[in-house]
Length: 196
Image 1 (cartoon, rainbow, N blue to C red):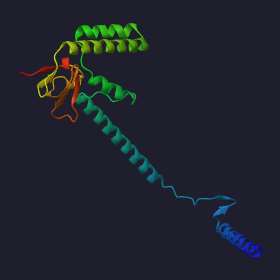
Image 2 (image 1 turned 180 degrees about the horizontal axis):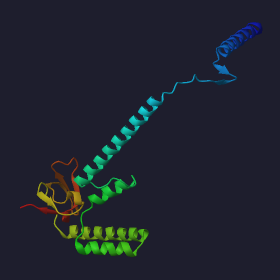
Image 3 (image 1 turned 120 degrees about the vertical axis):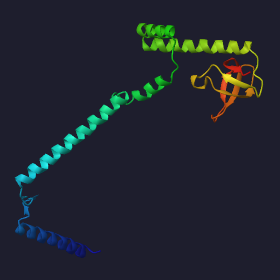
Image 4 (image 1 turned 90 degrees about the vertical axis):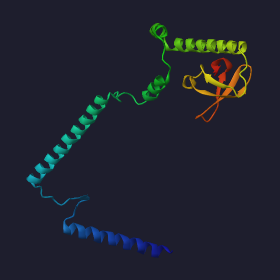
């Protein structure tokens, strides 16, 4: 495109823009560069009616909220207030097996007397001791026979009490196929009792 044609295109666009601006100014739509909105007739009766409707909706919403809270309280639901990141921690706590009275007292004493990091070290030592004892018991016991029907009496709390068949057996460990579970349960041999 030549320079003269480009200039004439720009000049034409500028002239059109100036013409549009002049038309708007003559109609009173533009004052300077700010637009003036057409004044809206405000009817006081409509404004009062609108405010009353808004207040009624607010009261209804609050009544529904109070009814929901009363229903939760009547059902005995625990309040869901609190930090969202603690839900996962509370769910993990609910899955833990319960402690007997003596163990619960010891737990409270430990928690009261030691800091978090010392308790973590203590928990690791307890896990190691537990694993050592399970290994010793498994080594002293007999190998579970393949195909034997067994009841799981130790290990992960969610598997305790389940019954299944031994599908793999070694001196220390065994795999038990339990109906309803996709994977076999991997246990120490001392954590299962042969059914009679």
